[in-house]
Image (cartoon, rainbow, N blue to C red):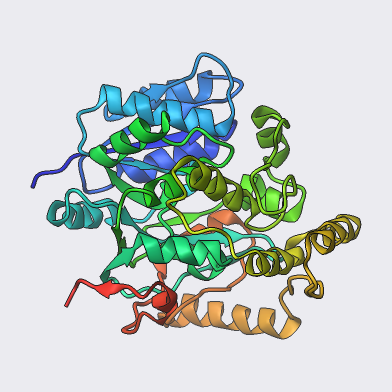
Length: 393
């Protein structure tokens, strides 16, 4: 089957990052329609930039809106304006690797009615220093049961399977699935956390999705990250995210309502969908969820906030011990990596992986990440919890 692709890039006050995302997509060796949805305070920088690219359409809501509403409006506008068979949400902080979308299109052509997920690498400054993290991968295509994944989410195993979760920004979605989600839930992803809202809605009516086990992009600009600001309790664009989202009924469906901790935001979206879908998702294993939330205390930057959240968890029934803070890089590790970087640069020794290597800037880390991707491995132990079906044999 012949497929066509539309990619939506929602953005807010990140013109530099959004431009990088557009340039990387425009250079792909696959025919893509690109829709840049600008929810920024000022339209001019990105509107003028988009005029340079014939395949890029500039979108802008009537006013500044919450992230979930912006994503939902943007995907619906793209579906209205484009005849594409498949759609994807693309973070403005993500750079797609060369050849990524052509490979994905080939898989979709063989499985045109099935959602396809994929992992990404990322560059992050927490814990310091700024480091590149590359996920293990095989290059294979796997079938994954949505029932199995929803059960793992309900038992607090989100972190262990995060690279293979079909969150909206790591998916290649057939039009008919988007239409089905919209028909059943009125919107595609309009909620506090649109990534997770779409995923949980998808779980309620599809039995399986495909996972293409190869990183197709690199997340960067972690200093601007909403998600990291949420995890740490400060930083990034999280304060702006909360302001636009509004504070009424904040995470009220979560297992521990109202607190910003670990996967609690995703759990909120999961429970909202579970309640609204005739209980088609498994209920939470509360002790397991509390253990998962307790483990996320290691991300909290402020000691006073960590103590406050610990008290809230204990009142909710958690009886664990607060984990140690995330470790930084040791002096010995830094010296080893500098030596390895020298060998790579001057002796032209191609490394097996540079995951965990530290860099001076996002630009330097991106350059190395694109030049030295992690090599594939034969086994898929990193996906074992999902119990996937290998479809590449």
